[in-house]
Length: 236
Image (cartoon, helix red, strand yellow):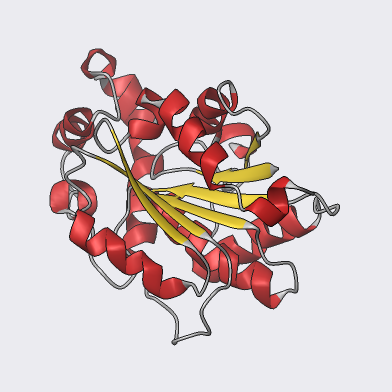
């Protein structure tokens, strides 16, 4: 099964796709980069959600060849994955699995650690990221601030600009929601509400770690994903 991975704010999808892929037996983790980062760093970022979703859905639709596929979005990527799942379903190619992590449902605000930090001075914004486990304090300095923080700020503004669309028919795709036990940006009570987006199976699993657990606990993430692949897909 092919799993298309969608990265967190400020990050490249490849940053967790590669580490999870090393532990994912029977699964192939495929990074789907947003313009302006990873192997698409030379491209200008998308101006808003419609352009972003059109870009990413065209990429995925262009690769579908009958192989079962899923979407795995972490943090900001969870919002992207949720919207992509609807776009791909509406295009006639629904995902076989939707994995969402590190984010409360779209109609609920995330925790506040980064949500209102987009306009903080460089040092304070980077310190917030370090406290969440998303950066190494030793990397602090003008070069990092100049090269990395503009991308992070752009992603945080994209997240702030997100508004759930009008109520749509539920997905029929099985949904797996993962969360770090010590993640301050999510709450178990809120995460259970992701079940409302699908008529398919729903699984909520806690994983050791904080907000960036996919990079810290890739073997556990891969184990849960392997167990979550629907039986009809496993037999294809």
